[in-house]
Amino acid sequence: MQRISAAIAKRLLCWGAWAIIGVLVLNAAVGLWMQDQHLVLNDSTCEPVGLYQLLGSPYPLHDGELVEVEIPGPAHHAAVAEGLKYHWFPAGQPWIKEIAAAPGQTVTLARSGVRVGGYTLPNSHVDRWTPGHHYRIVHYPFGTYHLKRGQVWLYAPGNYAFDSSYYGPVPESHILQRVVPWWTIPGSQFWLGKGD
Image 1 (tube, rainbow, N blue to C red):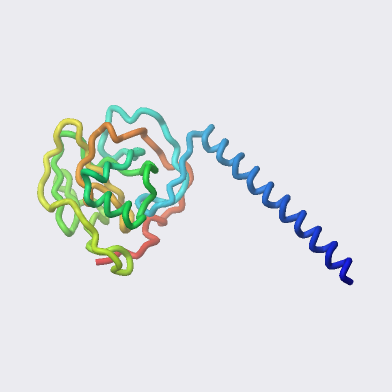
Image 2: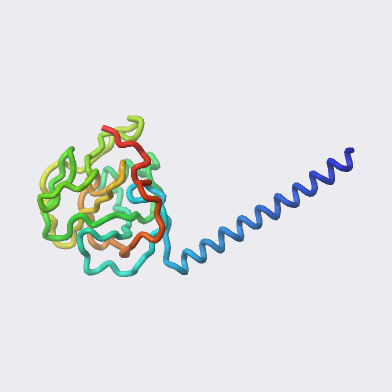
């Protein structure tokens, strides 16, 4: 009986090792395939969760386009510093956002939402608290902003989306690439229930 148990344990250990090797090989293969297809994973609820394809140069920029964006510097943005401090997003990982307004356009930011060209962006209400009311959220000062040359206003329609409502306009130089959804989970940007 003891010999049988030892044989079973040895076999299970061998299967476990092969399973781990298989997962590592599969993970590497998927990573290489995604790199070859220029795909990135968005796992935030700013935009629908899923895979997005990078299309290269975003220029010229147009409002309404999805882009990959370099995270703004925390030294100049209190909201970004707060988000990094509480690990709301990983440092150094680009974001996927929509360009809501380009240079020359006017944006009005209020608690009730963001207005561009007289139109209020859907689900752009500025949150006061994180989910569960654990932390008060820093936001950009309410007011009207005329975007200067080289500035864009970023928007994301998801619940608890972290966009220019919190850190303000960003330099065009932070826009890395244009992107399009490749495969996403519809409605996943609303998985976190919207707070007050």
